[in-house]
Amino acid sequence: MRGLSTAVVAMILIIVTLSAMLGVFALYSFYFSNTDYTISLQSYLVGLSKVIQVQISTLAFYGISPSYKYFNVSYLIWVSSPTKTVTLVVFNATPTPPSLLSYTLPQGNIESGLFKSKPQGYIGSKSFTINSDVYMPTGDLLGVINAEAYNISSNTTYVLSSIMKPNNVIVIWILYYYQGKWYRLAWTYSAPVNQGLGVYVLMNSGTYNSSNPTNAKPPHYLASQKGMMFGFWFKMLNTQVSSIIANFSFTTVSKNNVDVIVYTKNGGLYVNISEPTVSPTPYTFTILQNLNQGEWYFLNISLGSQVGNVVTIYSDNQKLLNSISINNLQLTSKNGYNVSVKFGSSLATTVISQAFFASLHSKSNPTQGGLTLFYDVSKTVLMNGYYYNNTNDLKQIISVANNKLYDIVYWNFVWPYSNPPPNIPGILWYWSTGGGYPQLYTIYIYPVGQNTYAIE
Image (cartoon, rainbow, N blue to C red; front, side, top):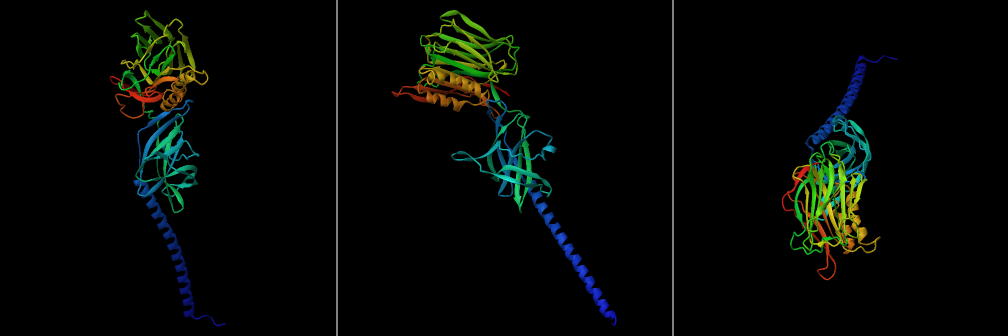
């Protein structure tokens, strides 16, 4: 066979060389085009993450549950993003250094909810489940999550509520779904326990008088031939200083005054009940020998022929600490319209979170009548705890009473925001037959003088 000519060999070498160069160029172009795409994607996501803004309001405190192992918090949350919508994942976690908390993954949390304000009230936002890989804006895999999520609109305010365990923090992720993958653009957290609950609790009140407002036409508030009861949650800030905790004064139809004063002295808790026009000697007795500073107590005083004259005190976990019956106290025929109440002391020794007063009208059937409802008032305030707002629960009791209770007065002195108002009213529900048949009325009683508060 004749050998190939030099020209043909040269042509073959040129073709092989060109083919190799084209292949290398194709690989080069493919690699760098993907690299450019990845860089472009990262630049876009990182750019988004840099302009995401998250604002969270100060804590709003909802209340401690009866178990005292959980408490409810609420925030206003606002997210600004150049995208129309983003996705929110909220979960509770044990506090860790922020550098580690950044890598903490949600564990199927369902303790939080997101709400949006509508004309008809707050409406729950619809959630969905994300079960997927989540990446950082740089493309690094953050982890696999299975969690509830919410699509929210940018530049819109939402209400975030969560059930917290002690020493937990709330972690908030801002996610964005882009080209088939989930990316976490931003995250933040709130530590309500570490920052303090941020609630204000009454330290000293003005005087509340049931004769105000004057347009109310209630029945007798004081009806000791049936039964009356008042109580409150309190905590001692200083047990070494003697001071008044509460002063209840009743003016009867016969112009006789009955004063009930709860006070501390030498670290103990005392109750003084006096009828100046009947007996010059007040009834004074010790309810507790020693008060523990910083602990919550619930005091309940019942007076009247159908309920007995009994004073009881409970610890913060509803344990009965002491009960005293006053057999020689003659308050069986006192009736009146005027109740005057003052809580706390200017000495800043006590905080009082809530209080109540109830008056029995009809004992009726002991299992279904007024007496059961009468005791349900005290039981509700006790069992719900010292921070829980009992307004709805007590309104339900008086609503079904149908004139078996004269009235319920309720004070809630826990203010969950900054700068509590100088006057927080008590709410009074009462039954009256002014229209010929029993009707339930609601009025508010404002104090004469200003209230002062301590931060709890």
